[in-house]
Image (tube, rainbow, N blue to C red; front, side, top):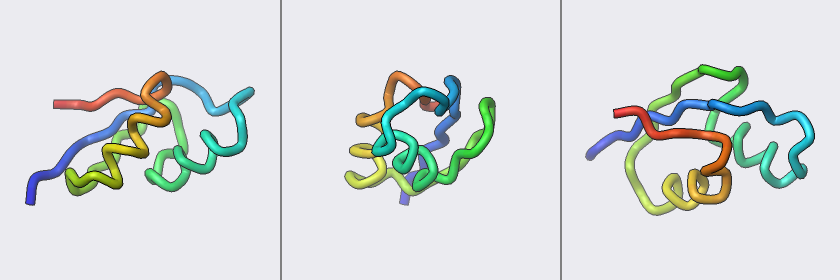
Length: 58
């Protein structure tokens, strides 16, 4: 199955708790960290909820 790389570009500080938990569920802890996930609907939905804080790395 295809994979997708997600990079944390903005801080979790000052964000609502739901967004913080979504970032942690994606496995992101530090700014600049990149994690790799399977490209499926659940991961895409999580990325969409915090798209102002992450970017997809090609």
